[in-house]
Picture 1 (cartoon, rainbow, N blue to C red):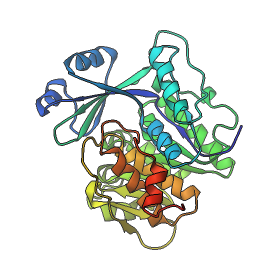
Picture 2 (cartoon, rainbow, N blue to C red):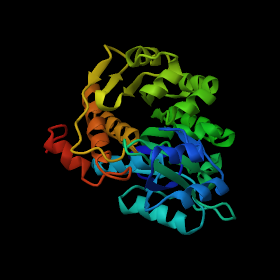
Picture 3 (spheres, rainbow, N blue to C red):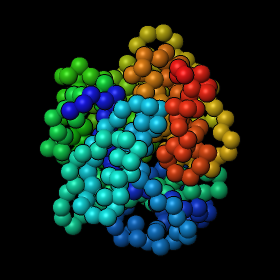
Length: 332
């Protein structure tokens, strides 16, 4: 198995995006700016209320791996899909952009997962996720080399919602550590952090080197409302990390030195914030594997996030490598 810069364990989810008004969120009980796990019946009801939709392969870690490839990096995705039409479409979307995705599809009645993303006029995205097969990621789905042959092994925090997939995260992170690799996680959602705070904090301290969080997630993890205070407290859980603050930029830190502020890049237009955090983590990790400074890692993350929020969908439409070269962030 060929070595890659990043391998990610994540939910293989097909994103379905639609523009809605604020009352739609209230009607369907979807938390503004958050993520709600829903069943198949609820998913059908939300989908029925959508008007025009855009359908793209998504999932937090899958989005990140697509961004790593767009920077010119190498990436592997590990996730669970059903042997159905959406599953085949998801696999094709990953392989078409050059991400290695070889986890076998699963047979049976549970369909491939989908995330129904309601985009309000302020460009905020609020998600109702039917995990389907995506949440059914087990230890036996990890093939030899999936974890060990990556410089950084990256975990999607949503896996902490399910006891079985949480155990898969434990096993995978341990394999990464035993192989001398770095283990990273994106916290994914403040609600998830709050629901599973104690086991999550314990997991971070034992198994994780890098944590990626937005301000709300960092606050939920540490109990600190100020992003700088939260970043300082995160050092109790990991060696490297970042706290993103939307248009206010991000805070980055490593094992030594001060916490640094990284300015955000201004988008040409703000259309849809779906995937901004996924893109940021991808840029940061890509920079890390190329031995960039922490501030440069943050700048690569900010650049990727700016690109994906300028259009619908969570994956880049322009080459992140070309954009980074234009900004002088990577060599020509």
